[in-house]
Length: 85
Image (tube, rainbow, N blue to C red):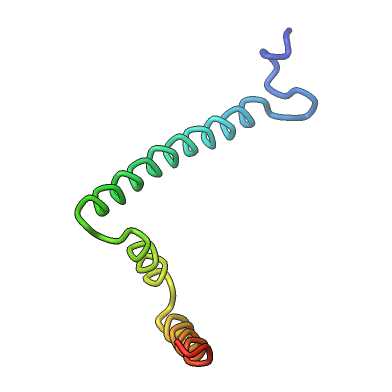
């Protein structure tokens, strides 16, 4: 019996391990494809005249809690005034 035929090699369930690794690999490929799609959307936004940096900031803000955004904006305002901006 070869190692490949043995479902448990060295106490490790080889089929289960292979399944886990293959699932992670598939998800990594999906993530790569999604990253490409997101890049294409940002290119579309840029070609439409939108500022991609600002869009990224808005997306980041939308992920945060409103109170956290307000606190950051208040601190930003205080720091700007302290620097005479």
